[in-house]
Image (cartoon, rainbow, N blue to C red; front, side, top):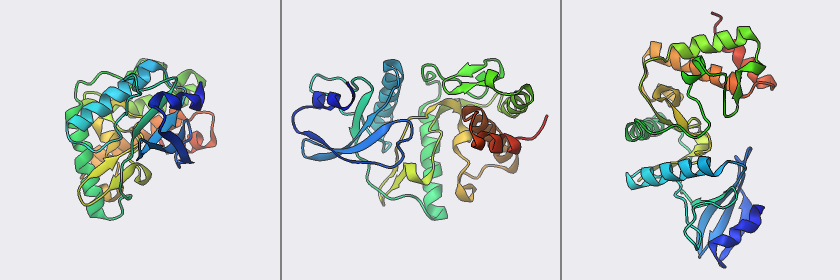
Length: 243
């Protein structure tokens, strides 16, 4: 159905302009009933989108500033891969103080989602110590030596508390105002170890040297496995220390 599904949100809805950051999905700003909103069209399964919608509603109820799914006229939160969400105002973080606010908000996310179920079809870093595939990762496609290096990095996370991680808290996905720290683009969020979210500028989350090294190596290994087949993945794997 594609963008035709937008009609499910009523008569007073229209696409305005494409938004940056839509690599896997098409993301547009829309006018909906006189308000600015965001529409995202992709190929994720209904189970995947239901998980994300449930998460965002939970975080909104708990006071975090996130894009909240807007229901269709019949009460559905998504239709054929299309989800419409509230627009989050704000600017990207710049200063160390800004990033400390981001770190505090991410830690709040992590506290609120301990014991949250895994996103359907996804694996955490430590799951991949024993599993070969999960979502965008297929370790069978990598050379054995590369897999061994990645798994050695992930093994250092064993025993750490897991929770939902945003997985991409970069400046373009943060919206700061004087009153809130908004986090957008939850397309890569899943359950994993909290420190993977906390590799922030200025070490704003105040990770110890050891914790920062463990998280950096594990995240770099994740990037290499997730992007295998691209030049970027080879660059990332080169940063993962040999076993």
